[in-house]
Length: 395
Figure 1 (cartoon, rainbow, N blue to C red):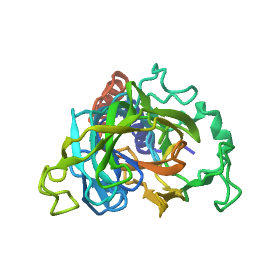
Figure 2: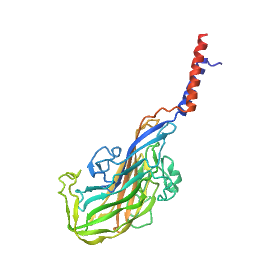
Figure 3: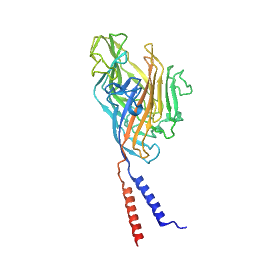
Figure 4: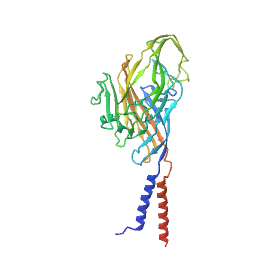
């Protein structure tokens, strides 16, 4: 049985059109923000201090708070791949970055913390050659399959998992470290078979200062936070239970200090400049130097919960951070994706734990038509076929 020429031509046109589309380079323009949350009230960088917000992780909100001036900005040209459910993409190194200079923010909603100041600079994803990222957790470009180079993934048999350190944290069937009898938990829940994930790290350079009441209303201690230069990769987003240590510097303790007029509004701290330290009295002591252990976990569009159980200065210090990713991109990769990544930290000298949960939002513009040489050839052939068919029908 012969197939009508019209059907043959239709099939050939469809095949050539599919070839032309496959040959077409789909370059997308990405813009986004990276939010770094350490504990329930600390953002890195501070970016104007915290303000109330809604909308959850897609708006950069963590515990209904976000930086006034937004997260670490990102922009890059991103190349997509073949269309399909949860299409993969690669974000090039250093697509996100910020060097805002010195930032100072009062913290009127925490009784023991006076202000945060920093001169941090940030850049990520880190370059592949950065030796500060312990192998095999180097993730210079964000990509869906970057975790394949991470042997720790052997312990992650499912996209959903629970990891904990210490004892007494249910459930008890999670992976336990042997570092000490303290408690914390990171839980990933990915019910969607097409859940998107990957690895990338943010490098933090420079130092920050957390000014705290050091045992009395007249004693002000300046805790030095940050790696200095060269910087360190932050732990959320690197890989399954990716581990590193930080060395924390000693800071002075002053007797007496003065601040600007107190804040009349706590969130955000208003008026601008309120409650910030203006002068400090003589140095009468020092906060001890210390160190901490950090564990990080990959990015996901699922739900991440990071929790720690502790007491801080005889007060309950339990923290639970939860973020849920989203993926509203089309089959061709255009649209918005929100990724979340968890982490856990143990401050060894103060016997305190805190949770971390980072958020990255990325919006991809519709593909920009960019016909490649094979695509142009396919398009030309389609035109010739159409002309030939028209001529044949006429004669």
